[in-house]
Length: 180
Image 1 (cartoon, helix red, strand yellow):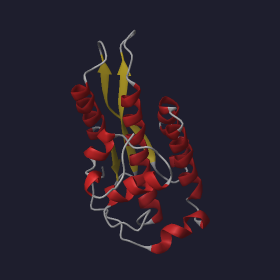
Image 2 (image 1 turned 60 degrees about the vertical axis):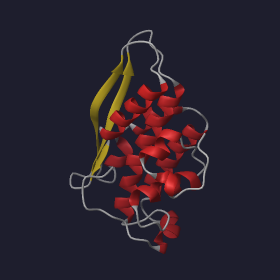
Image 3 (image 1 turned 90 degrees about the horizontal axis):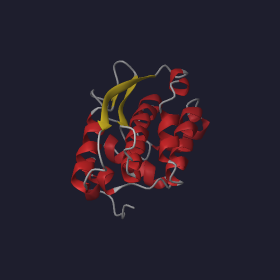
Image 4 (image 1 turned 135 degrees about the vertical axis):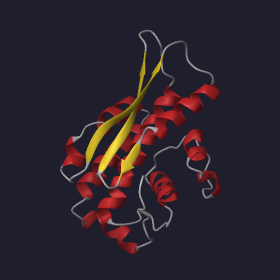
């Protein structure tokens, strides 16, 4: 999600990003995406909480509102609601050039389902990719809609999406993919 008027415009410059000064930022995001593809969701989350790389580009990171699981694993419907709350607590603030990441934790002895960690990692990647859109001045895949642009970018880089992620961002209307 973004909180401002930023809307990338389609441009072929996406192909030239490898040469841009922002390639280090993008490579960092893609290394976290690789962790997601390998099922290492919590490693990806920890990596994306590190403020050092975005700081080099004048982008900050701050903690969003947290959500703590207090008891047994939630039902599928409650998982969707938890994912939505984390997503709504995560933003890329254009004016402040800051990534806000909603937090997820659990009480001792409460196990967080892997599906939920996967969703949180995708949310974090999503917000970092809004930063890349801002830094490069436009679309990552030549898509005009910034949310669809990010979804396609993740797919193009082999990062598996969840049903919750696809439904949350309205991607099912635009993508011919089967989520994992």
